[in-house]
Amino acid sequence: MAKDKIDVCSVEAVDFEKVERVRQELPPGTEVQAMAEIFKALGDPTRLNIILALAREELCVCDLTALADVSASAISHQLRVLRGLKLVKYRKQGKMVYYSLDDRHIEQVIAAVQEHVNE
Image (cartoon, rainbow, N blue to C red):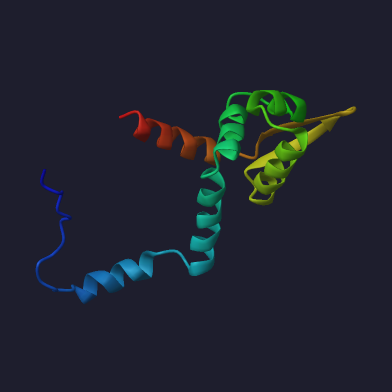
């Protein structure tokens, strides 16, 4: 069985003008780092499941614990990570704490990735 060859240039011919043009349009390193942290957080299946659930409905920690089938302390830890990245927010109502997505941006990212996966 033949191995797949990786398509690469057979000669080195860098278009320095094009490279510099693209370099100027890239976000600064701090922004790239912040984006990488979000993708890293979403790379964890438990955190991704929390985001997927919260994209559908606001849920309390108890709901998320039952949904993810992990301990409340594990869910709380994951929610702290997601809150730190401004992916989720919470509100208190009496003795209950309800979580939801912080804004529509993350929902759009998840929808785009899900569409890509299902193509």
